Image (cartoon, rainbow, N blue to C red; front, side, top):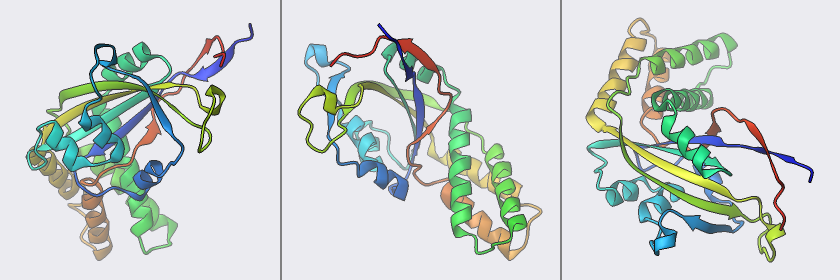
Length: 241
């Protein structure tokens, strides 16, 4: 039988910590095609999916913190989502990923996007300088003290059409593996303040202050899910519907 190649896994990072949701997160949530929950952790023993998992999907940070008994005023939450067709691989990859490095990369991307959206200058040199400063600041943010708090997996498949009737109306099933890390909120915010102040210690212009303000906002807001990390391929027998 002819083999087909599948994307083995994708790593998505979501940084949680405030109540706002970015426009990109809303766009992801707006997908109207049905998503079927095929299997989940504890299903074989009759357990329901924990509510905190539903709130992660919805982007409701306040309820995530409440369900996990991690008060928002005390904890900064980082949720990593691994996705792929093989549960063992997804769990192994997500559990062993360099969380600090992945969060830093996600922060850098969001800061740069916000800078480009909020800068009044059209001068490429000024824009590039701002982006370089973003890299400098993010590299100074210390994310020490992360503690793994919870994890959960769900197997789902998303319909290709609004009203699916047959198996062929669905995309291949994937496993979604959520891992929640927490960091002391005061420590996280202090690290951000130190990094921003250090990064701008020799920048005293009004333009630099604008960039600094944008960075402070970006580093403390919710980051929408975005596919990151290495994509590899594997060969497997095609699914027969």
